[in-house]
Length: 137
Image 1: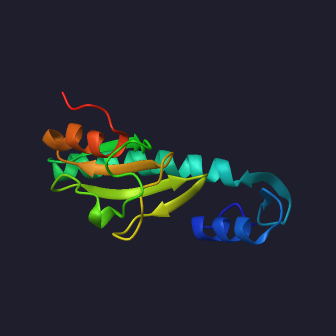
Image 2 (image 1 turned 90 degrees about the vertical axis):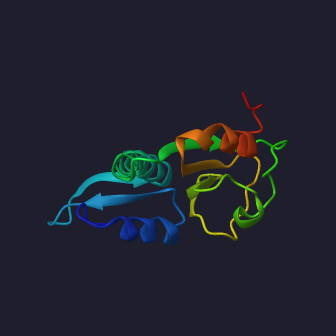
């Protein structure tokens, strides 16, 4: 994989190899490093957090929220569309067992999932209660 390759190329390369890593090469085909699925996801999550924070500043009425789905939470084992999330909540991604899922209404919340969302500031506690089961203040 070329060092200048886009994210989708890296994902494709990792998805088609039997190894947990792929070699990164320069324009002369010399090895300059490796990329692993876990490092790719970690880098993506950092970029997502930065971009989500930037979006929330632009939107003005949304804050980034990251939660872990608890087995006892009301939304556990439910599709996003059926989870009775607070109004204005946007689920951006769900990370499940190291795989990153771009969420839609059919995506289910499973215990252990890491959920990245945008929510209204006054709805964060209600969202937290639905996803991780914490008691509301």
